[in-house]
Length: 263
Image (cartoon, rainbow, N blue to C red; front, side):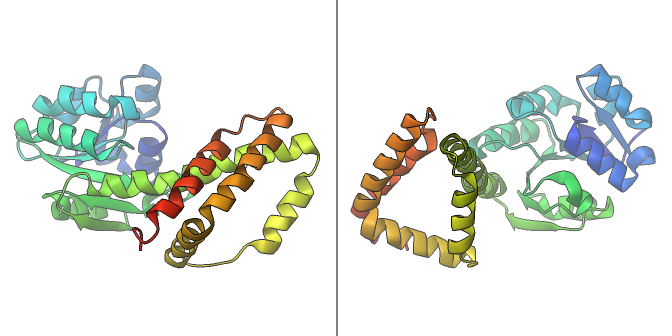
């Protein structure tokens, strides 16, 4: 029995999309883990070949280290012209390598970037598409219930580049928060640190915020690097490894030499 969509991987993202879209009668899935195949119910198939047979659209949602192997291993199982939407969080180069494998086998490859957690957005989660088959993929994804889909170009890797570079900030803020809070708790100044941040926070669009931050670094980077050196010493004295802070020292120290290079 053919499926309108085949999911490779039935973890958090795959299971969330399938449930939100009511894909039991429209989709099928294969996961290497038996427990996940069991969780997929009527959608589950016992082999990748069975899941991919005649499916016009495939969404790959595996772990990052399995993204390229999955494309290479399953490319030959695709029906001619099937679209492989690679929704895994991997580098643009990894997406391009996967595209070669899919297209060599007669499939069509689309670089798919998922820009937010799938909960609570579910089918409203922002999706970026890149690749020559992106327009066809968008039509099929919208028919499945996805409502926030945007094409960013024909070059495979462009959607992934947006996601990966954005993650530098998003995941970096999380790591900085962890380092800051560990030190604040160790020093017994958690409430004061957080309230001081509330008092100084400015609500700015990211384009203005980025320009402001870069100008501050280019103009005052050397002084700020020296200050952050002292911050690193403070964390060390509290038994907190200043991993992120040491990186800040390096970027601040280098910034004045790049003055004018970044608009």
